[in-house]
Image (cartoon, rainbow, N blue to C red; front, side, top):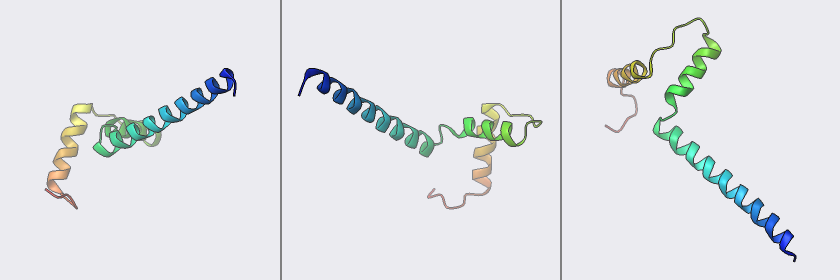
Length: 76
């Protein structure tokens, strides 16, 4: 095998590793709710373009208040 073949195989492997790590990062940020506000804003702009978008602080206050009013299937 030539050095050129090894280099392209190594680059392909590096791309796969970066893609996998990117997917893992996306999963954990989605799981922990880090993307909740960004997803909410995207939804609002797409489905309710004329509605006012609350600030991130107000979004989180409203979200926590709703969870306190309706705990659902939370453990605590």
